[in-house]
Amino acid sequence: MKTIVITGATSGIGLETARLLTLQGFNVLGVGRSKENCVKAEKDILSENPHAKVTFFIGDLMQQREVLHIAREIISYLNENCHGELHALINNAGCVRSWYMTTEEGYEQQFALNHLAGFILTHELLPMIVKAKGRIIMTSSTSHKGIKVHWDDVMLRRGYNPLIAYKQSKLCNVLFAKGLNDRYAATGIRAYAVDPGLVKTDIGNKQTGSLINFIWKLRKYRAVSPAIPAQTFAFLCGRHDAETSPPPPGLYYYLCKEKAYSKQVTSANATRLFALSEQLCGIRYETENVP
Figure 1 (cartoon, rainbow, N blue to C red):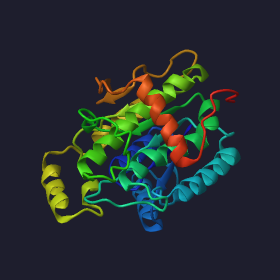
Figure 2 (tube, rainbow, N blue to C red):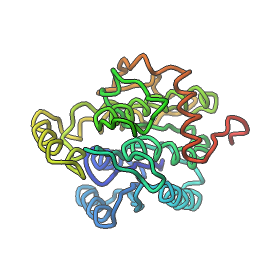
Figure 3 (cartoon, rainbow, N blue to C red):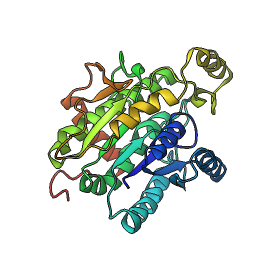
Figure 4 (cartoon, rainbow, N blue to C red):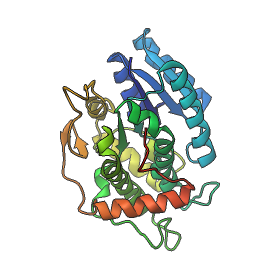
């Protein structure tokens, strides 16, 4: 049974993806922020599929110390139960903010959760993904287009705009996937970014001001069920045999099909983001001697 880790797995896209993947026979390790939400999500999945193989880990991925703690717990689980192999990591956890808020490290929260959390978790779990010739999938957005990374002020401390911060973080998701493919394609792994489209979730109603909360509620009337983008994640997690049926090509997917992405997604920008992210997280991705 192949194992998949999903962050932000207690609601919205993450929960629906976990539900679908367990129905397809995968062993799902979900990550959620609170015990209450994790228990509720597990009961939800098991109520539909009593034989589902699902386990939840609890932690606030906004904080780097908790990302590392969860990574250690997942690594221990994989070594004990999955021969140290991870078929896929879905970096789905994300947030929207109305004003400038920071983490323990002093980093802007949208950049920290939407990008850096996945950057750290992928780094910690990469040897196990490589061992399984697996894949890493980021939840991005079409809003990554029409924006550039603010290299001289990536936290947007000078003149903070929450929408620009969100768009920049979604661009970083695609750049991160590009950078992973540039570095590790030879190992047999693959990285993707998914455009989920306009989805009916509560991301814009959590810790946001009254204006964004109101706009998000109106926006959801035109949105699709999270079950729709869940199909794209399941497609990219498909049970491909590395020798006879390689994983899908391409980088950016919408409704199970390749889609054009921003011209800002270049190897040069991906390399620059990798170096900046390593500095901000105090880690270094190895490009040699990867198991």
